[in-house]
Image (cartoon, rainbow, N blue to C red; front, side, top):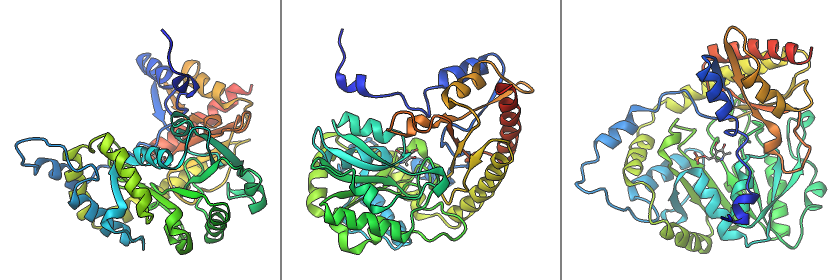
Length: 395
Ligand SMILES: Cc1ncc(COP(=O)(O)O)c(C=O)c1O
């Protein structure tokens, strides 16, 4: 049997592809610290579960394709806390930020079209682009610049008559970089000059540390009709499995087209939408507390990694990831070895090899992405293990 070129062209996620090896290690009785994935260990607020219990319909019906009113209203209110203002017909509820990205690409790109993205980028961008027949065209950001954007000329040099959008996550997964007002302005200028959309993935928007100022793409007021915002409750409220996100744009014509995609998949899970509305409506100090916890973990992860001989990294400004250069030639091989051949006190570490976050072949080969949305104890133990492992690996 033959399968489509579409699936053949896709890669397995660098975040999940080593799971069979970690499962095998766990079957051998080894404890694995999962620093590969952005699955927060923080408790989902009770209000989410109360929202599920309070659902008292007798039928689990389809909801509107756009999403339920109370959830859209909740998002409108919570976005306005970040000075992001949308009207009801400018928002569609999606199955997580993932579906929002997919819809944004499908609504703006035809097969063969190109999407500019600073690399390294969230690895699934490659998959989302490929299933739509589009292609990510990367412009490189470097560890020595804290992964901030290159000069405008370097970005413009990548534009062709096939370029339709710029797509970025801000704060960035995998680097934790928060782009400055000047950087965002520059992207806005490029979008205007070259008639492009900006797909602005802001699913980590609430996790920015050290009072670093935040510029949402939606704050670029002269290009509002070009901005497509992607947001989600997955990371902000530690509700990854709920699969609730949104795609939003001031470009009502674009949203009208995206509605067709929403209608084709009928609706987002109805009960989860009610629960999410209840969650967003009653947040209190939850986000502030979680942000403080992540900042502490970021500091421990950064100083721990920096203390390992040969490891180079810069301090992330947001999200909950750090991208480090390891003293190895091939972080993929090292990641596998950690799971198949190494343990220290019967424990080992799993991370995401960084080459999967680059589109340019050969880049990121010695880099690794570590997630720090796990406990301080786990982070500290992982640093000890990683140090021992690198000593042994490089013997
Ligand atoms: C940058 C970025 N965008 C989007 C997503 C998808 O999130 P969701 O769970 O909302 O689909 C993730 C998940 O890790 C992410 O890191």
